[in-house]
Length: 188
Image (tube, rainbow, N blue to C red; front, side):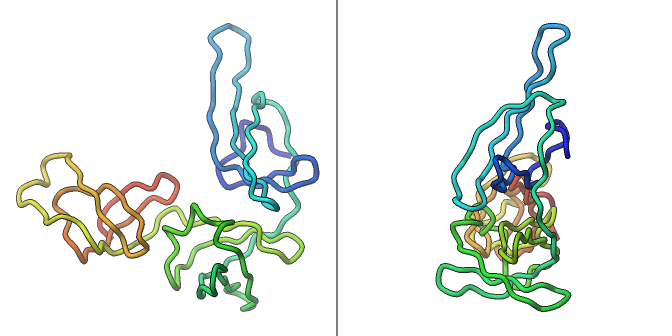
């Protein structure tokens, strides 16, 4: 059973018998002496998709949900559903696009390094790798000599995701994106 202070984004806990994924964590340290740090969480109910905001003290225990982690790869899209394949036994899991809506900008065909959270044979959620490499498909032309400045410009990636990139990048370049922050890391 993890403490509230040990929970990270993407972990799944059991709240009133229902699995909830941690979407965001915010720590608040009180100014008075002796008071414990409060952690404010935003959870997503993995069965209904509803959001839940809760606050816990740092030493409060939460029950971890009973699920299995499996390495998967994105296979294809079928209507509104996305099909993922287990990389070891080739079994397939189907999930509605609404369930993984905030992850879709990072998922490309053949993307590996993802982990599926499976409960009772049903795919609940997907955990992305720390970073993904994607091609820039649209941005304003690069400016020569701008590598010394820290200015950025918007760039559209192959999945439709828009990120801020340095001014010197051109269309067609492959860049690395941090999946937890959604920010540009480097050229790939």
